[in-house]
Image (cartoon, rainbow, N blue to C red):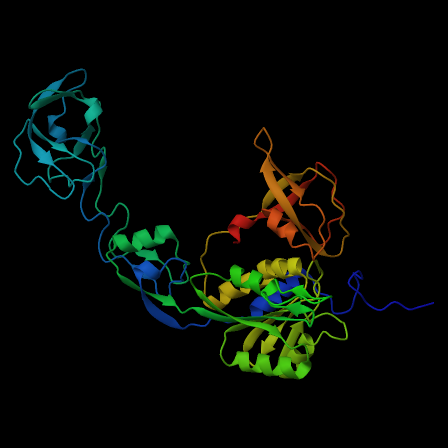
Length: 420
C-alpha cells in the first residue's frame, strides 16, 4: 500500500491556514511607507492624501440663488389669500451681482448662482410668478430663505474637508478645486517589481517550442497594477534555479517596496521560489485553504514584503485580489477608499463545494425580470482556465465551512467593478 503524501486535495494538510488567518498575517506585517510628495491637482486622481485638508474659506463664499427667479424681501410678501405687485429694479447674474439699494416694494431678477443682495431673504422661482413688463405679481405661498444657498452650505470655513489617507476620487478633485487648491501633498507612488518563474514560460514574440507556453501572468499583474499611485517594473521570466532567484529577489528588495512573483511555491522538485525566500528572509506562510490559490507564499526579503503567488493564471488573479490588493492599500497608506461590496445573489445552478476551504469561483451576475440578483458560473473552473476570468463579471465566494450549493440557493458575490 502506497502512503499518500500531503497534497492540494488534503484539507487537513499541515501548515494549511484559513483565508482569514492569512489576510491577518499579511496585514500585520505591512507597514505604511509614510513618504510624501507634492503634486499638481490635475495629477491627483487615484492618489492618497498625506495631509488632511482644512477649508480656508466658505464654499460657497456668499449666499446665492439656487434657481432662476426673483429675489424679494420677506416683508413684501402679501397676506394669505392676497396678491401683491413688485417692481423689478434690476438683475443679478452669476459673477455680476446687483449692488444697488432696494426700496420697499421692489425686487430683482436673479439667475442661478448669482449672489443674493443683503436684505433680500426669499428667491421665488420664475415659474411661480406672474410677469409683466417691469413688475411681477406674487402670492403668499413662499417661505423665508427658500431657494437660497447659504454661505458655507457646502463647506464651512475651518472644517475638515478630506482626511489624510483618502484615496482621491473625481468628486474629491472637484472639492479641492472649489477651495482654490492647485497643489496637494500625497503619499508617494508605490514601486512594485513583478516576475514569473518556470522554465516552460516564454516571452511574447518568441518562438514557442513544444511543451512551452507564453507567459500571461506578468501581463495580467501589470494590467492589474496599472494605477496612478503605482510604478510597476516587470522583471520578466526569471531563471528557475535557487541561486538566480535569490540574487534577483535580494537585488529587488533594495529598490522596490513590494515584490510579486508567480510560480515556484508548490512542493515540486522545480519549485524554488519558497526556498529562495526562506534563504533571504522570512516565510510567514505558504499554504492557504483556498481554491484556487492554495500554494501562496508570503514573507519578507530583508524588510521588503514578498508575495509568491501560484503559477496557474486564474489563481494569480484570485490571490492578487483577495490578498495582494489589501496589502497594497495598507502599504500606500489608504485608510479611506470606495467600498468593494459583496452581496447575496441566487445561484441558478448547482455548485460542487467541500467544507474546509474557501472556494472562489468565477461568475456572471445579472438581474432576473423582477430585478432580483442572480448568478451562474462561467463554466469550467480549473485554475488554468484564464478565460473563466475574462467571461466573468464577479467572484462567487463560497465560505470555508460551506458545503454544496443547489440551484436556487443564495451565495455571496463580489463584483469585479469594485476591484478593477
